[in-house]
Image 1 (cartoon, rainbow, N blue to C red):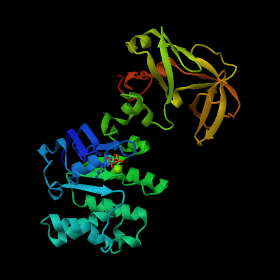
Image 2: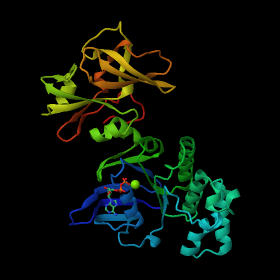
Image 3: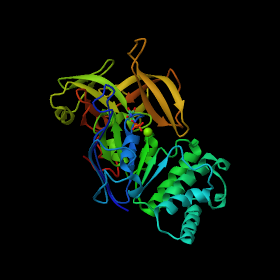
Image 4: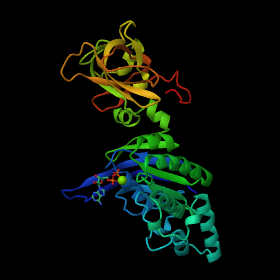
Length: 384
Ligand code: ADP
Ligand code: MG
């Protein structure tokens, strides 16, 4: 067990060539001992490259990686005491489950054969694969193979686990089960873990903290709720959350935001947080928009709207709205989530209220959050 530190870690492929790629750009993350950190971001943002540098499968172009305080940039992978689990499982096809799980211990430790056998049995029981020990990988389902791959990592009792999208080949139901199980196992073992995924739901539900990466650049490190409610920038705001935050392009003049199809006066305290920004993006989460019947008053922050599409999810409905006086052929749309028990149909006229305390504002020059949602009414997140 150990803490893991990434200090300005950079990876440049084909450095100096015409096909140079800066895959990871000055990433700083301190991962505490026993922490479960999820590294999340879109495809191609540098997640696997980061993990491979930590594992020693890729050289580091610049910066330092430390495990338990020890500089490991030049340490060969086999000497790092790190276990990695891949999406592809990477089991040895000609070996049984027992042999797959024993192999690493035989290679890298001085453990006696009986001790190895006992450790493998114990881990297999913990993973619920004790009945499969004498089968070959081809005789296992995808879920069972993934359990074996995890068991093979766990049995080594490493200082850190690295997992690269380990659940993405499983069907949705099994993925949900394995998520919970992995979290429980990680908590029981207390092994520092970096878990890579492109799936923001996985990041939100599994991480002690999440690190959001885009284009090789770290955007934010924080608890899932910090990233959700107080995003550093527009990228994080849009990436975390499903359905995504609604964004409106607006211009600030005086103390009013003017969009393509609406105006939105700002309260004084919000206005004063905007410095000299004039081109900004207004953001509001779908669940923060209040949805009223059309008899409700229309006002500064209450807009008459028309329901375009209703997507029932069961517990909730995702309702796509447009502003009633936006009669352009391609009107601006936004999403409101409401209770699944509420009856609403395409074509309904309604009133959508965007409460000033729920809005986010981002500077279009750099995407930086100028104002985030007020957290006075949200439990469990420190107001910032
Ligand atoms: P992710 O895992 O987030 O999808 P990767 O870390 O695999 O992203 O890739 C990050 C970037 O680095 C991508 O632009 C990818 O094309 C590039 N890349 C990855 N590996 C190599 C390589 N061996 N040579 C050149 N470019 C690479
Ligand atoms: Mg990857």
